[in-house]
Each structure stands twice: as structure tokens, then as C-alpha cells.
Length: 436
Image 1: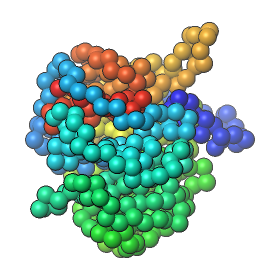
Image 2: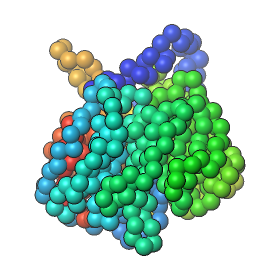
Image 3: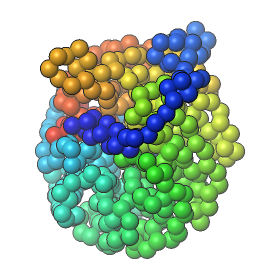
Image 4: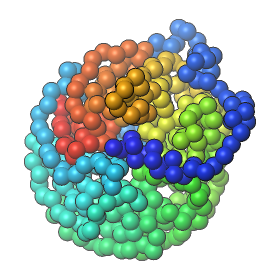
């Protein structure tokens, strides 16, 4: 259902738009058939992804809301508990909100506005509270969470309802600290940093909000493309700058104190992909690491930029809708049409690629053909985890792309989540599963 909604939304955006087929194919790069489209690094280095050791992963702003270390988890994985979070993916609720992990607990906001606090060791629900009302559907925007851990161990959770309501609550007992309404629906995720939270709205405003009282610090207008698509992407704070994924292939780097636009860039559309992907919106979260921004466009490109100079360091014709994973000298990108790639972060050259089926039911006489959507990649103990639409988790050697094993879970609503020496899977029917 999620895949159909995604395609329907983009189909409506482009309905009625015309283009010249000859123009569309001009300068197109066929990354699926042309072996030379992605230049590979030196052969003797392709079999070594040069991953970080486990203790170093926390230096990466990997933009996934849990922002976790690469846990030291042994294979095979074994299920230890399951919690029903009372939500599901359907046409009215196309995405499940990202969860966050703080102080041995998972905080999970379902698409009906109920917040769960779950102890990760046992799966015990410490409490659950309805914090938003009348969420009959989340078709305008997915509810989102962020969190703050103070030096004194105090936990504060920040949330928005996918519409125009933002609140802060006590992470210990769930009591509301403040609640505010914004004049326009919020677009994408929410990020907390120091004494501010950062969000975007559908009119192209980017807001800094005081996370102590909910008052707006400043508002930067960055614009919004008329054909923008559904997203859960959130801004990333990198030292004194904010990386904001935008619409139409654009992203912005703003100063965190005043919201001044320091520079912006646009990753143009890859016309070789099916037309549904041509809008160019950045719906995968950016990654920041050691002065470099890595951005994946859903229209078909991945690029690396120097955050200080705005220089484009490399650009390759691989794009997607899932947040990539970076470790050591390699970034792993879950591209469109079943293409999984391992890219050298210095040169942008290919270490290895793995091609999975591009379509579901392609040869079926009884079912509609669908573009295959894969969840992941997630890095766990130097292994890549990626899931297909049926919920089969493929466990892949990060050094060469070889499949080591598989795990049958269920259709996932989120990519696999490593935390506290466990891996968590949130299924499309709302089951949170813990594997050890």
C-alpha cells in the first residue's frame, strides 16, 4: 500500500506534464546496463570497504533519527520480544514515524498520535499516552519525534503531529511541557539541537524554535517547489550550520544562530529513471561527516559537497528515497530500481554494486506490476542489512556485497534499527520486533 501511495502521489504531480522523449534521453546515463557508468576504484581496493571500528561510528551525523553507533551484534539474530504499536501503513497513513532511542528506552509515536516509552531490554511498555488528537490520517505529513538528553540526565521529547501542532514533553513521565500551533502544516521531520528545534513547513519556511517554551527564534524562507512530494526527511545540525533537505532537488546550508543562507545547491534530475522520480526532491536524510555533506536525491543522483566552501567533490547517477549509511571510507546507497551500491567517499567511485529485482509481479498475469522498494541500508557489526517488500532481511558482507544470510521478518515500515546490542524492526502493521 505504501508503494502504491508513493507512486500515486508522484503520478498526480506529473499528470499532464509533457516532454520530448528525445530531449529526455539526451545525455542520459544508463547505470543499469552500462558497466562504465560508475567508474570503479583500483581493483585491489574494491574488496575492502575500510569500515570504522564500532566505537567510532558515533562521530557521524548519519541523519537517522536514532543516530546510533554500529552495535557489536553477533549473527545469527534471534527474536527476544515483540510489541504491538497499534498502527499500520495504508493509503491514509503512507509512512510510520521514525522512533528514537535514549537512555535504554525507545520512544515511538504511532500514526494515531499515541506516544510509547518502551524499555529495550525486555520490551516492557513503561507508559503510553495520547499526545495528539483526531489523527484520522497522516496523508499530509507523518508525525515526527526528536529528543534531547541534558548533561544532568534529563530527557525531553519533542514531537509534531504531521499537521501544525508541535509540543515538548517530559521523557520520564510523559507530561506535556508546552504545546504550540504553527500557521501552516509542517513538512518533514524535526531536529533538536542545544536549545532549539528545527522544522520546515509546506510554504517553504524553515523555523528555529526555542525548545524550552515553543517560541519562534527565527524564520528563514527557503522556498518550496510547486510539485514537492511527501517526505519524512529532517534537517541535520553540523557544528554551527544546519543542512536542510529541500524540494525540487535543492538543499540549503544555513547558519544555526540567525538562519542566514550560507549557500545552496541543486541536484538535477536523472532522466534515465522512470518519470515518477523526476521531481528531484531530497526525501532521504543528508549525512554529514568530517566536513563533507553527502546528499541523495530521489530523482537519481548522489553527491558530496564541502560544507565550508560548497564545492562539489563528486556526483554519481545513483539516487533513492532511503537514507544511506556511511562508515570509514565507504557510503552505502540504496538506489532506485533495486540497485545497492558501495561508494568510496573520497573519489565517488564504485567499490561494488548489487542488483535486486526492479519490479514486483513483473511476470504475473494476476497482480499489478509494482516498482520494488527496499528498506535500508543499515550497518550492523560490519554487515549491511536491507529488506525487500516481503520483509526478507538480506544480510550482506559490507566488503564485497556478497549475501551472507537472510532473516524472514515481515514487510517493514522503517529500515532495521541497531541499538543497545539489539536490532529492532518496525513492521508495516505496527509490530516492533527486537532481535539479539
